[in-house]
Length: 334
Image (tube, rainbow, N blue to C red; front, side, top):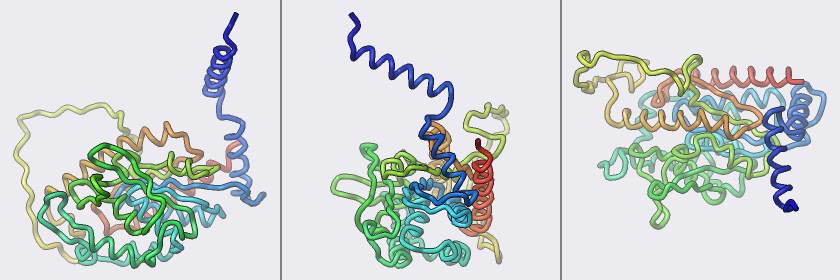
């Protein structure tokens, strides 16, 4: 006689396989249709939309363009989870900052403004202390706490010693954004007792799982670490002659007018460390957005270096265009 529990397990397994082979679940299909009707102006939004805003340093300015496009499409954002730069931009939006306000902050700066936010220290745990950035964010957010925000919000951070992911959903918003964007080696990490907390993007670069746990019905994931079109993390290797290799050194000079400060020389130790972390995050993010199965994936390849904080306009525009494209594709679904 067959054990009823065993029979149930077999039945559920068959259902999962059939669901994988023959498409999305009825609930998913229903949500896609509801979203489409809202985009077409044929229905009110009676479901919650959650945004998962990913890590990416300066590439993350693209999130502003994404928010702009969603607003203009009439999509109401009900909850946001952010990692690293996604936490900084998402936290600002959740705190009530408009798209225009976020754009002004991103666009109205020069290389001196960027340098003024940096407080270099003797690198025992990081090159930059981060106190100036925290103070800037606290002022920008109006000294708000996460639990008081207009839009429910969560940020991610990682205990670098144990590899545990933590979700910050209470307390000072600036503290949460600062912890979530503490890129290892670059910034001094924050601490909680014996925990050393670094950038949430180290484990969860696009926090789809977090915004899902917040109760979102329809999830939009934004990956600003997307590889350029035609290049993926599975790209075939290339060949090189070892005889052409030589020692590399950084050389610096004072930037010219309207020249980004990071282009004034070859990459230094901090930049190499930063780009190494960003590349690792990009590889994780590429797989994460596929496996986590959000309702919509917005992959943005900005073409900018992660340190390029002076060309936010390019990132914002690319975020906007890619979002418009995905919204148009959503309208075409049957």
